[in-house]
Image (cartoon, rainbow, N blue to C red; front, side, top):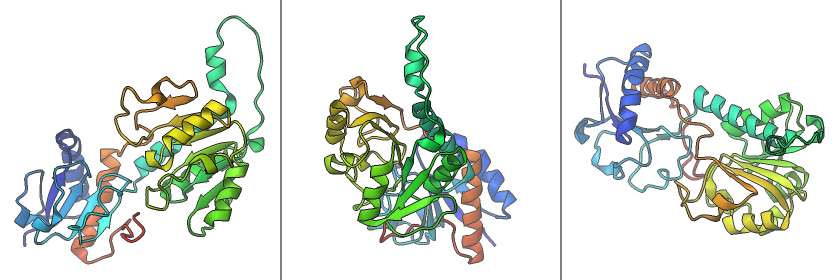
Length: 312
């Protein structure tokens, strides 16, 4: 019996990164007789390993398509596609999660310890500045999905009092959780450092604007490895100029790469990071993809399915 046809639909450099790990993971998962290629004929495709920036945008041309397996955690650029009528799975894997935890904790500690000022002051002046202990620096985390929950837990382990917010109620041991409009205001008002890990949906786009930025304690720091359009750029710059926001470390932007003439580049209160907070690692991502192919062939439920109505 012929196994499944798997189309790898991503930009060309990614195929060379993924081919060997994907084959190894498929074989380890017990998937046999498969055909894996970036050039598989549409009539032979059962699964698409997918990056939203690939040339594949019309899914209706694949008559036997069973599922689309996203290589990215974000699905806002594929979930609304009207031609996509089969299950869509987002990427949730250990490598991506660990990478995000390390980036977020590193940036939060950087701001908590005041490392920018320490490293900039190398003039010979002995000016000790002692930061508060982590237990006295409240952190807010907006978004309590897989990445938000993991990062909130890591920060709490370091001693930070963490309040997490999500649109719907969630319970996480060791984390104070809030939801809804009132919960958002409460989370913002107490956060000396705010971490954004929300998905991008109609309800979260432009969530941080002049009104909500004003709810943060004066001088609060924002760390955004989530989605660029969560923040209104012009309102953030205004809040930085007024001192309402002390600094913003941004890894994601409305337009990427960030245009050279964007004011973020020159603003002293902004750190631009080139969307590196958490890359999908080919070895660990391949294991997740292979497991979903195995499940599809066995008639078992897929992992990490996207709620198309919610958009994530």
